[in-house]
Length: 467
Image (cartoon, rainbow, N blue to C red):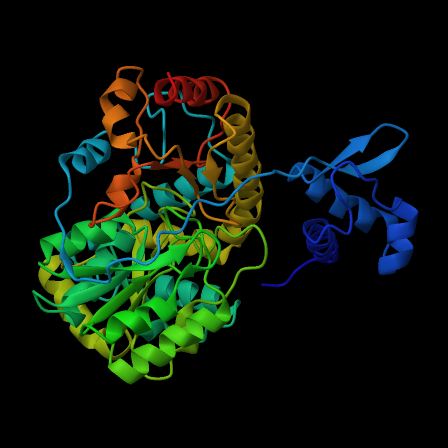
């Protein structure tokens, strides 16, 4: 994706702040000095400084200049190692279904009033309404192609081409969201009883699918910075056959981690050597605070990576449209979709095509990423303000969630009902493992601003966990 000059300056300055070239409270060079250093206009430099100020990295002091704001002092959540690396049958707890029924997967306070929709979402709704009025008789009387709208698949293909992944629109199939895409990927690549490797802590949606498909899980140790550990996968392969591996290389939930390129390549090499299907969940890839990285699919030389994603996290939960690029399983995936889903909604696809073609999705992402970064910092400030200093938490560079480790003697699941009495929906860490790990962890989301009632909810939850 092309970067404007002010964005390039902002990224460079952010790297220097992260590298402690300027520490907390230190003054940055003047606008004139930065203009001379980068050989760009003062207006371009000012625009970059506004970006960093909006992100909370610097602050303007009247008649003085710009200063680095306080850097968060924190400890990353502990990584559980070594894990057992043993195939385990999955049994999702009743608590999982209670959370999902409340529609609270990414909101600690789902009954709190929503903020006003952005202009981009209003524009999207107008496109949907327009699409519904267009040829209603044809849409009412004819199903869509099982592969989905060619125009939408073209827009998705172009979206990936801009970040260095080169596929054809015929390589994609439209699905009912990312969960449906993951379901299709597991269905075509695995048989009941097969072993599937997942990062640990794992996305509970994947665990749910493994349970329903009677597949066994092998949890692979992950960190909150580098994510899935391919060396641990190699150890597991010495003990067990593994049919598939499900990974979220960009801002995995709940850890928020991103896999470095060397770990991605190591995973591909192992998959090629051991005939493993790599199922890539790219649903958070567009929610990066820095440069958008290429999916693992870009490293695929044997058509064994199945790429899955959707618009539900980056645009709207109400849009049940996703996609899957199935590689060598593409034809089988289309037939399976025909059996299980038949076709996708034509009006939604048509409206989304116009939204993307006119550049609204690209502009929405630029706007939304800045909002999410500010909301991440709001949440972290609240944790620092209201919760004990003993907690550990991740600081992801994208996505929607923070992974929090609390005191060893606290089992977060035991406080679920008590929090619910305060209309707070707690997401305990135990949901993210089939082996009983992460009892003293929880996931928090910054999908909503941590202000007003949600800030009060964080404070109340702290009092519940530490009475």
